[in-house]
Image (cartoon, rainbow, N blue to C red):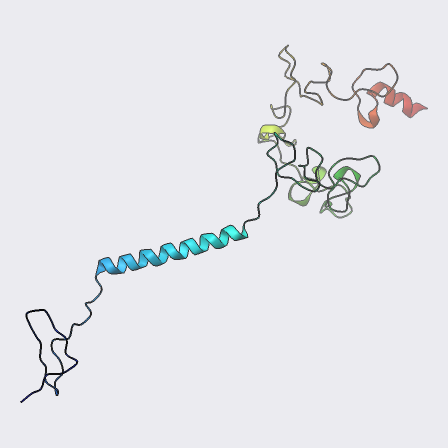
Length: 214
C-alpha cells in the first residue's frame, strides 16, 4: 500500500494528486517557461531603469554656466560675471590696453598668443599655426586668386567682406564705422586739421612722407 506524500500539493479543488515515495509527486506544479512577452517586458524594464540611472548621472555631471550679467545678453559669463563683449574675462596687462588677453597675459597685438610656426617669425599665429604672411589665413575661393579671404570666403576684390553702408550704393570695402574711407569710415590722420584716412603710423600718406623727410 502506498502512502500519500505529505509534501504533495493539490492540483485543484476537485482533484487530489498522490505520488509514490519511490517515484515522487506527479502533481507538483512546476514553473512555466518564460514566454517571448515575458522576455521583452523584462528587457524593456531593465533598459528603462538603466537609461534613467544613466540620465541621472549625466545630469549630475552637467556644469551649468552662468550667463552674462547684462539683462539682454545671452552669452556665457567669464571672469567678473560678464561676457567678453561686456568686460568679462582677463584683459591685456599692457598699460592702457583693454583687449582680451591671450596666452602670456597679453593680447595678440602686444605679443600674446601662440607664434607662427615658421622659424624666426615672431608674428602671431592665425590659421593652422601660421601667421597671415605665411599662409595662416584662408585664401580667396577664386582659383586664380591668391589673396586672403574675408567675409564669405572671398577677397575684397571678389566681393568678400562688408561693404560701405552709404545710401549712394557704394561697393567699396567698409572700414571702422561701417563706411568706406571716402564716406568717412576708418581712422583719420593724426596731423592737425587733416581729415584724410590714416594709414600706417596713424598718418595719411602725405603726412607720413613729410614725417619721413624730417
